[in-house]
Length: 501
Image 1: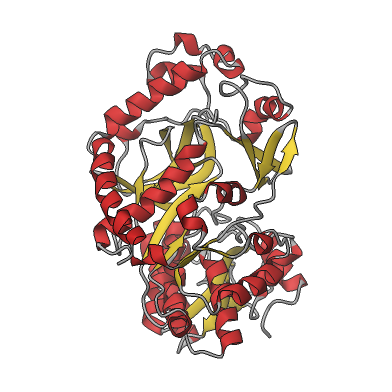
Image 2 (image 1 turned 30 degrees about the vertical axis):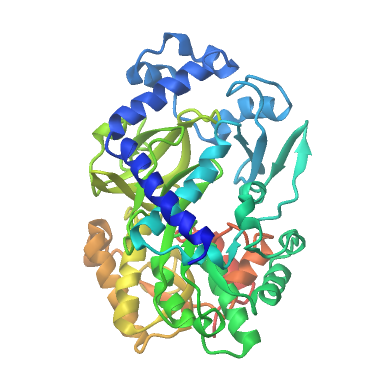
């Protein structure tokens, strides 16, 4: 074992003991974070407008600060982007993470000198936690890929802007710089397909031990590696590959595909990063849930997904949540986001410690007939069927078919298979049966002959990549929504001739 690997093992033990302090005291930790946030921001424009000096407890906060999304905070963010100090947080942001918005074009998420370290620390701790559990740190001595956007940053009124992953690239510790691939020049390539081809060239003959990226990117990268090398699996190319780090979407629907490409079932750490904050990571090897990070400069609130669209939904703090219930996650942070709805729904799997699974997006669901099917349900229904029918998928999306040419309406599942099920009709029926068990509203609609069973439409090879490229969103952290309440996405697949005949 090299010096770097040995040092990582020692540090992982120290870090584990330190992290247990807040893990064992979650409610007190959140109270402390809450007090810090209010105290530090009381003299900002937002703090003055919302009477932070009168806030004594969480109930006062709920009375003074309504839940908002980006559009609701945009007037304040615009002032910060224009260079005004002390708007949402003291001073000026040190970065703006640029993301794609749905109604306002590009979004500029502030990152401050207080919030930036939490992104770096969380990513580091995810790896240290893995090392502590596994007792093996050999991967730190090999080559590593950290998926990222271009590290080239622009400036807006004196503040640097770019993709979060590109910003984070500037904070990779010096002791890892020598291990890091691809090159700076390759990372700066904008066209994603060109970039992946170049990454394949630079990494194919290296001793890759850690690879990080969202699952669709990993699939694309691995397929190109196998094609160019002429090998049968990634394990033949990278025999010392020890760890995958993923985020962005649920890994489980891709698991069988990954096993097929790699040649075995790799060690995986799932993470939950976003421009707005780093919320969690998988703290148990082989588990699917994530430790919610409560000591990260983020105060969390939750609203039941069933109540979210009510006129006055109930907002609760961490101490009132229940397991196995879907909540919209609301955050207030040291970046100056206040009662901010990031759009994700989460489900608590454990309260000691607090662990979550990301169950979907509050705006991404299928409920054209009142069924309100969410991502967690469709992914679970699909996973069970994939295992039973020995199938593999690259990607999928679901849309309602409200006005079919004939017969009852149905859910259309557009699936890009990498390995067809042994019985496609049986596979379709299995998913439908699984989904009916998971969602009683969907079951009632099928039983009542309001809907017929789902219909699978096969998408051509690389169809999802072609679709995303048509939007200018191929690569990076971009991903196709799994669920829609209309046919905009589905219709584009037909227009682009991406459906198998």
